[in-house]
Length: 252
Length: 68
Image (cartoon, rainbow over all chains, first blue to last red; front, side, top):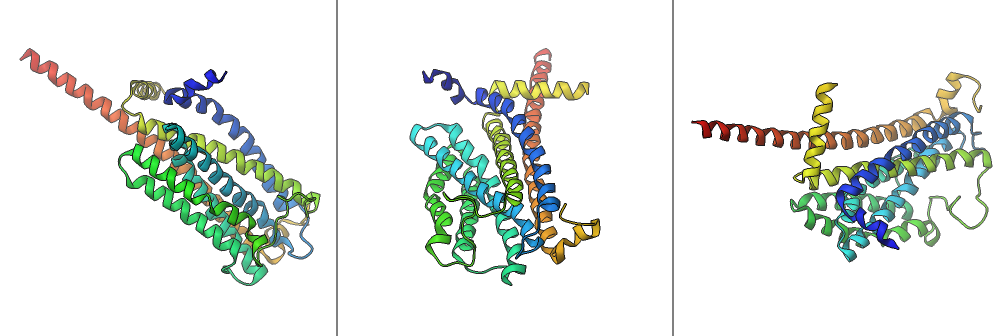
């Protein structure tokens, strides 16, 4: 039954499949980005308490959510890679880490720029902020560890193990606003109750979340393909691919 | 529309610095991420290209030696 999946353990097939899927993620990410950002910046009503500063939410929340989404992706891939010895899964870990790090940085930075006018400080050692900062350090650690080995098989395994160790941070980030008394506000969307946000504000936020998620998907595929090319660069299919692109360049 | 004029929009109800700083830095980070990824792909292609050409040169040199 699962036989159709088997060829995708081969790098060449995965390269081709991710190449086919990539544009679809972009087709979703780009329009939702423009619609969401224009809606959020210009059309959503100002918050009755926070005024227009609340518009930072349209990048802050999607970036923070997808920073954790990227980490979950990496954790699942790391687990698969370690248990079933699938190299492509370890490549996914390496491909996703820099994207997650950028998202985490965005979440932290926009949070600081939002915190300054609202709380009066760029940074406070609050549970949510601190655990998010640790997430950034974990991401940077994974990237550094992966680059520290010239043997990429070893590097992939080491990075995967570190990824699984870092999973402990995910529930801490999510529940930090519940477990500790923090300055950061509680969950607005990801709770079982009704979302505590006006619909006119919520819709552009959801659109932006879709945009960030599909951009994450696109970027993972793009960097995953880079990892495959790098690691298989001596294989005949990669050489044929490069020769083909050389020919196309000469003609064009 | 939540704003009456363009200058009103840019002013962001007095929070212009924080709002535009957030959006600017985020956009810049995303652009850097894309540039880095594209650059990496180009670098790999370039490396393989150079290797192919080197191998071709070596082969050509070997052929000349055969004639001599």
